Length: 496
Image (cartoon, rainbow, N blue to C red; front, side, top):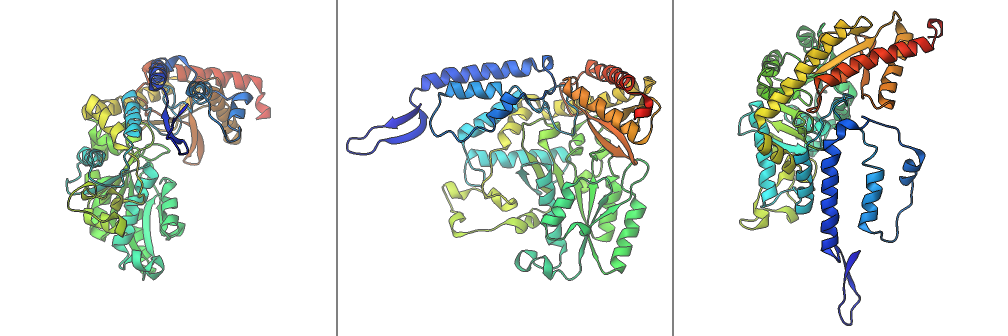
């Protein structure tokens, strides 16, 4: 119940603080105990399950006008939200590409919310920690200490930050003052045909349009074709465009392919292009002792996007944009209204972190990353990355050893594409494998996604999970074969 302050002769004043802190303290202990149980026993629960109608109905309820006891509110959350998760903390969640969180990071998020700081800037401890975590990201990727950087919501926004700086630096005019319509020659950005969809959104948001992003063909390993890139740049210059930026991908979403970052860095230097690296999948491989060589050259980038909520397993959400030229980074975003002017002392004497991005109000994202790195150390996170990549190799071997399964290609890092193949082709083969994927999800066995590689449909396993074990991979192969046989037996070949 809310506390009410009675003042003689005045209307009662209210607060959101509880009347009885002891009751809240007791419930909070229960919540923490439940949270520990939730993570400890995650392997015993289904990866995912469909919500029944009565649970869905909870989320259609109208606005509550009057209060409910906090214990009742928590009970409803436990029955609904906690009982029907997306599933990405489960050891057999391999859909899409996301980390699996960690308990220490969750405590960090809780403490950040309790502490309540706004990270727009100012002279306070949370602001210094935010900058420290950015500095740690620079160290992990081999970026200079003088580089700029900012924590953002995730990889899409981190890419937008880097590409916005690239646009402004290469435009040849003051874009902030005059707008993109004043750019003399249309800018061209380049990425492979495997580039993430967020880059199209970036081009649209930057006022350049989707056509400003030229998709360059890839080689047999689905890496950007350097010769084709050079030819595209020459062609565009001759046609009156201004080549501005090349986007290297350190781990594509479909297969985990990593562009030749060193070659791209050299090409960008020779052609006077901005070199941006989308490292949201693979940038942090730089701290993995057995695999760091795969992202060699990322330290030469002008800007990099990375995601601590993937292979640093921070709770959602936290991304990071690094920009080699800190002055150019700040010039792209800084605005100083009269109400945010710095002072020589006091609260406003600290750095204004909102000068490095689009948000004035910024959450305290750094604490959950800071606490987990302090507890475990960066070397352990590097070993966990190596572990996931090794597990992908193990899974590929299990698939190759199963006569009814087919591997798309040997995995580059931690993404494995495969399918059940009983002798079908085309849409029939896709329908069968899609049904396998859905039944794996619906039966709570494993969460996979699917994709298209070289024009063909495949099931996709992205192992970005510190809880995954060898036994989970064995189970996946066994259950895929079982379901494949079961589904094929239920439908005659002619009906596909």
